Amino acid sequence: MGVLWYNGHIYTMESDGKKVEAVFTDRGKIIATGSLFDLETTFRDHIQKKVNLAGGTMIPGLVDGHMHLLGYGESLIRLDLSKVKSKEELLLAVRKKTMELKEGDWLIGEGWNENLWEVPILPTLSELDEASLGMPTVLKRVCRHAVLANSKALQLAGIHKDTANPPGGVIERDHDGNATGFIKDKAIDLLQRAMPSYSFSYLKNLALRAIQSCYTYGLTGSHTEDLNYYGSFLHTYEALRQGVEELPYRTHLLVHHGVVEEWKRLEKEGLPGNPYIQFGGMKIFADGSLGSRTALLSRPYGDDPSTNGVAIQTKEELFQLVEKARSYRLPVAIHAIGDLAFEWVLEAIKENPLPGKGRDRIIHAQILRKELVREAKNLQVVLDIQPRFIISDFPWVLNRLGDFRPDYLYAWKSLIKEGIPCGGGSDAPIEPVDPLLGIHAAVTRKNVADEYRKVYHPEERLTMYEAVSLFTKGNAYASCNERIQGIIRPDFIADFTVFDRNIFEINPDELLKTKVVMTVVDGKIVYER
Image: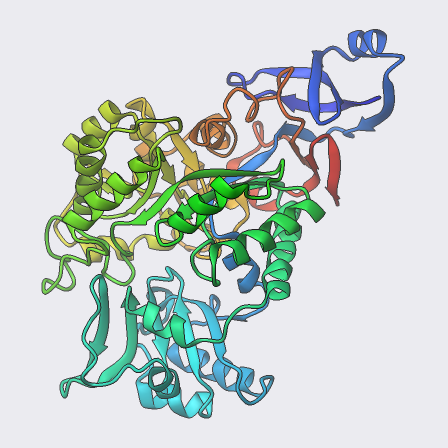
């Protein structure tokens, strides 16, 4: 017995503006679409329930194409520093948080961004020590490619004057060579090893909290990368698996290269499965972030000519990792923000063609040269883009680049015109998880909090259909699910997102006032406002 969905603006996303009057679903699948009269007549003996959309707008279930589900769950319970506007506010927040903790706890903060501060000056090590009252403290920058750590955390991690920079990482130092507490990329692993281990119940709670929150934003699934940061692969996987069994949520898991051998061994032995979990490509980091000046550029940074970024892997190591993925017949999903990192990734993929199923993905792809786009098109890679980065990164990113103006700078429209498949994500918790914020950024390319409402590269604005497609059809294609997901069509899965207004007919700024009224997974309402 099935469900009839009617009385709303039902956009199938098969093409721009394509709508149907009603949808009939049964056992998690879309059985038919068409007029209300026809569906009521055809399935009158099989309709168990009717859902009146009350004039709302229904689209295929939104999917976040790149995020960190457990990391997002952590951001919901840890010290939130995303709103602080100065180092003084940050230090005050740290001081207050220490009062809530007990002896032996670590104080972990999330989301500070000095580029949004009135004066972008970081606290000194002594200032952080004073505020944290001797509690081991690690404060993650919004990009998660840099952290601030106090002296106690450095001591427990064994980071001192004679500690060498690990490959792909940076320990910032003062004039005397002492660590300042500002730690970047692979050097963060030294701190991570010193932190307390994560219990299974803690990880499962993170998964449940994250999924419950994602439901409220209309998300029916995520492509996520969590499996290398919380202990063993199996420990983390089981927490996620049990989480999505309790709260149905389509979870496409990237497998970090650090745990791929454990994953492969367990897969051969018979890894417990789940209808809501799918494994994707092997995750690799080629570079860092623009905010921490560790994205790998082909020329020096405009505001710091002493560096052109950080190669998380040497070029040779990157090639070896792609070759390793191919030995397991896996596609790759590689983080590459800078143009030089992107260039190396393309060379590695070209050198090691994909022998099995799947699609290679390059994550972020913010700074590209024309010849790189041509090569990406030839190699048929999918680009995982985060439209919300436009709001967070402009205008300061222009100072980072100086007089370097790449051909494609957050150029989503041009990439789509070139025929390169793109999926949309948030990179939560680095950015807000709300997909409407990403869609708004893609369509407007402006920050409504900016009093001048400056539009950055207006020629790169997407239409509403193109922007919504990133989070529906685009992500379905990236995960090789385009034949069952991302469109409202018979035989596709019955995942839907329902809004309180017609997002295709309103002024784009009204997206910021739009509410999710219903989230549907497998034909079942999992969230209702």
